[in-house]
Image (cartoon, rainbow, N blue to C red; front, top):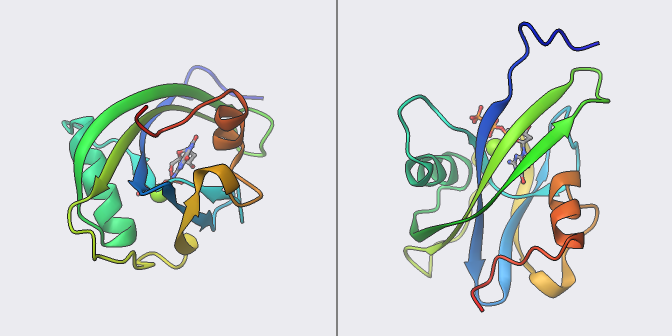
Length: 144
Ligand code: 8DG
Ligand code: MG
């Protein structure tokens, strides 16, 4: 049972990093969504803009520098049935590489098996549940 007196939703920023018709995904190493493919990102720190958080998380997790950040959408992600319940308000940004020759590095191997570029029309399986749900609902991060 969640103690709603002390439990609080957290704000997370994730990034759809676009390259041609591909997007950057990593296989999670985490109690939540372990071995599922998900977008890079993490918790918004006090005082940060969404753009700053996206840029920092991308650098911390992949070593990549990003550019042309734009807000895409937000989702209210509940993981209530987990042993430890979580509630995330997820801000989803879009970006491109600042330097098109830069390659992603797996900087936090304890939290990710590795990063790869995946075609949007042929996404890997299994996707992390919130991403899977968004894709099924028609979410598409590419500009029209
Ligand atoms: P931080 O401590 O470095 O700030 O965070 P992190 O260690 O990078 O956390 P994370 O697991 O990558 O992201 C925080 C939570 O955000 C994660 O446990 C569940 C939620 N989340 C979603 N959707 C997505 C997503 O597509 N990608 C990521 N990375 N997290 C997501 O609900
Ligand atoms: Mg992360």
